[in-house]
Length: 245
Image (cartoon, rainbow, N blue to C red; front, top):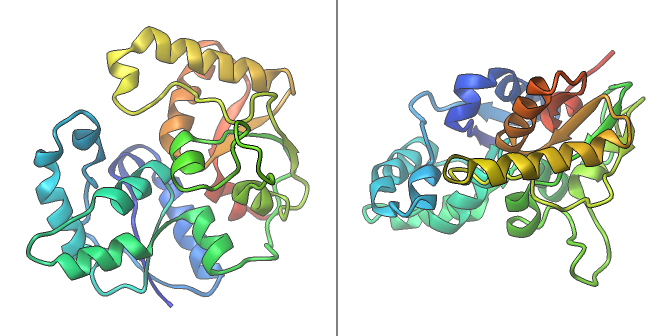
């Protein structure tokens, strides 16, 4: 299985350990992983701010870097959802279409494509799970409380395979953290209040870590935690699934 590793620009710049953990985990699970060196931003920030036309060169660059792979996998639900819904290249429409159909968020890929049933991972801590909006409502990584359907959670399914991990779910398990991409810049006060509410919900469970599939959301929560002097840390789910004794 030839897998192209897509590492969003902000992860590459600020949280490279998440990209490394994703690479190591995929290789442990038998994937032949390549990291195209000329990849850059997927174009989501421009598109979300109403400047989709400015992301055309990002699209072309993405197609040029990730054509020819069986699958493309990235540790960011929001970026992956953007590619699934918006990637296009007028010069290579067929290749863009192939990528849209074969780009996966990490936990989605592990559950739906690799169909993982066992992991050799250990993380002996109490962990709170944050469901990011793009992953939950866009990629359907977990069920939504407002819909009367059978409950499921792909991240939770994978975390249940990790030795020593005590998973704790907040009361409002699918509430937004307030990051929202450029929303946290344009509506700072609202964004921070939403983030504080999320942290308070996790704090009642006395967790050691908050995890999730989007570094952007975790970065937002991490900033609030640090400003509050909290001992709670954030960790991307790839780092947990790749951890060992």
